[in-house]
Amino acid sequence: MKLKKIPLEDLLEVLEELYNLGVDYVNISGEAVSPDQDALAISFTKEYVNEEFRENFSEEEMQEIPLNTQDLNDAI
Image (cartoon, rainbow, N blue to C red; front, top):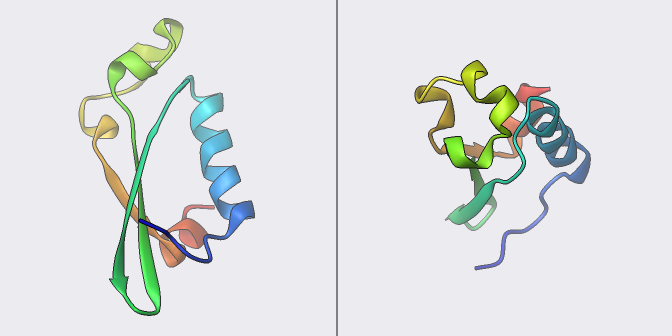
């Protein structure tokens, strides 16, 4: 699968925020929603979070979150 035109600045800011919260790894997946829009999903599990920070996350916060370009823009 090839996702197109993902805004790097927004993506990097989201990844940086996760890293600063103690997330060491993420799963990234995506799908073509329409010919003009792709959706990106970022998820992580408790095992991906540094042990020192695990108590800061609930199980709900570690669910897959689908993101599209607008979501990335709104997240920042």
